[in-house]
Image (cartoon, rainbow, N blue to C red; front, side):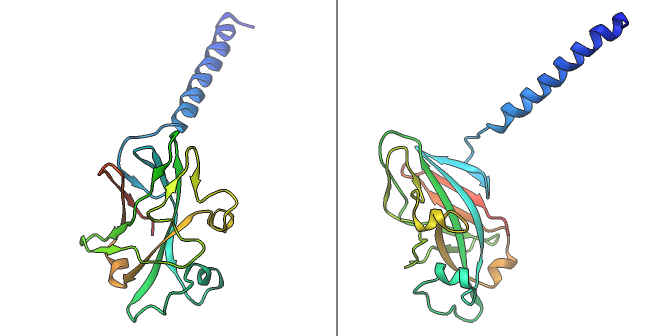
Length: 183
């Protein structure tokens, strides 16, 4: 084996290992930004929120009917929209959950969450126990197909034309997280 090759192979191996280490370290990257995209975690105080999924809901679909329990048919020109969340309490104390959330469209029209009787509903105004999560382990929303708690909105048809839609999550200390929804 030549002298150049003898030094080149270990050098190349070290370079590859260094690049892989950087890539793996970047996977754990978190940001303090309160403006994130759907699927990215955002921290508000001691709570970490993650929008798992968002989509329009169809009252005539078997799966969606479970999310729309107790809801009347949407008025003409409107449709139900679900945002599914996971929340993790990273502290040693229970933490309050917001009592409401809203969505705004590109024209800055605001749409408030509507009450829900669904077993999948997000527990607005409740608390997350120390080192626990929402949805709670082995609960209906955690065992469901999306594995997230539902926040329900009634949106007019024009909202889908005025994208992006942004979910606004208020924090306990006056902060607000803005999550751009993926439609």
